[in-house]
Image 1: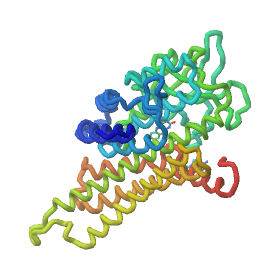
Image 2: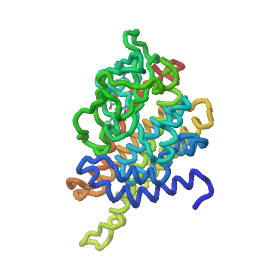
Image 3: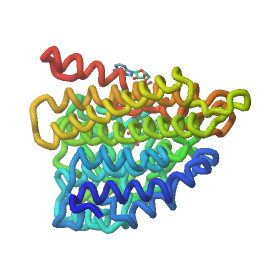
Image 4: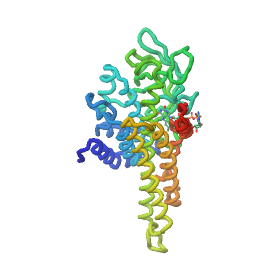
Length: 384
Ligand SMILES: Cc1cc2nc3c(=O)[nH]c(=O)nc-3n(C[C@H](O)[C@H](O)[C@H](O)COP(=O)(O)OP(=O)(O)OC[C@H]3O[C@@H](n4cnc5c(N)ncnc54)[C@H](O)[C@@H]3O)c2cc1C
């Protein structure tokens, strides 16, 4: 077991990924199952509290660790890794300004592997512009009441709590003035849309959330009202970007390994040689390896800049997630091509990777939004 705490967790994630996640990946996808057993195993391995402070029993780690662990898990099953990754983003948002009540009610149980959270920002009305919620909240005598709809809530209906964004009712809507609140799964007035039936990432339970006057106790306000410009750029965006980058990087690595295994194993009768004897295919594997390796380096670089509080971290994070999205779609396409007609078979692994990879560009922050933010940042403008 390595002495370095991050390496020890990475090793744990790698073992889990191979022994628990990978064997269940096909069924998770085929039956669009939320990966309950896989999440239980992740919890039992002590990985849920990655971003919970050490004094509360967590690991107190940042973005570099998130990228590594999400990648390891996604090599085995991208859906399970995504469910874990969204839990990590939600945890980081809670931990950013947690009150003593929130530390005991949410963060300590997360560190103990007893609580899964998730992030519910996107809405049907504003779509990819996830920082512009139209869900409203109002103060009641006993806390808060929420009204609105969230779309694509990963872990929807399965998590124990959800970080939800909302604007104060009747207040003029202005980006940056939204508020984050914690909605317990048992909150009266919380309801769910139909089960998730995605083209890919089918094990995510990314469902529509309905908040019909959902009531929350006063202790479930995160930070202070209207300080969410800070949350978006200091917590949500960096953790969201790195969580997604790690997951889709793992998917690219899985595509590479799938292609390698096929070229090693597939033997033609007319040559008696495996496909890896073909120089053109060897070269394609070399290109694929270079793509995955340099994208991994860029993600690690961007996450490291952020963890060190270095200048330029935001731009690097925006660019890294764009690069990962391009790399994983390209890697999944290459794997499909290298596996030939066998890869194209229905319910094959190459098909699953290809479908899962397509979500990389459209999951927030989307590639279009990130290119806009990046270009504006480089030009010295505010991102939006
Ligand atoms: C599998 C999956 C899981 C998800 N999980 C979560 C989750 O857990 N929590 C959560 O909050 N959200 C989640 N999302 C939602 C995601 O982050 C996006 O908000 C959502 O995919 C946007 O979809 P839409 O159809 O509303 O896009 P639209 O907003 O209709 O966008 C359509 C296209 O236009 C582009 N576009 C839109 N606005 C702009 C703009 N201002 N500038 C440039 N281009 C623009 C988009 O990039 C996209 O290509 C998930 C999505 C998927 C697919």
